[in-house]
Length: 185
Image (cartoon, rainbow, N blue to C red; front, side, top):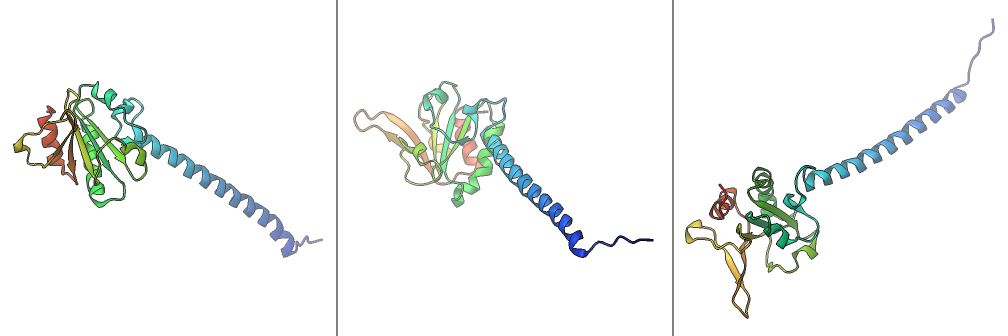
């Protein structure tokens, strides 16, 4: 009987080809997964498909403040950054309030380190800084009892109130107190 012996080199050659094909497939699959995860993350950041994009938490394009005011809801716009400590502390609170108050208030977040141009026209001196507008689209005028220090900006020529601002981090309780004064139940 004749035995068919293959040399070790002849066995290794097809094995190497199979391993190379597997490796290339894994690399392509990995790239595909990474790209799709990035797309999914961006979809999650904006908002659910059935929600109005004006109510999405994360802002990546210029804010149309007049359009937001037209909804007749209180508005809080937080200017911060993903990598500043007080901003990181506020992030889960903003996310929660944005989700739970859909249709009752508009809560937006602008990362000014990623999107510097979106802060143009707003008197930012520090981050985080929150801007407040009432249901009528006017700058919120807080009562003394709110217990949160806020600055009010007015035009120099007519002394018209244009912005109500809080500089620094805010707790959930403080944000809710401001929202309550603005008419959110």
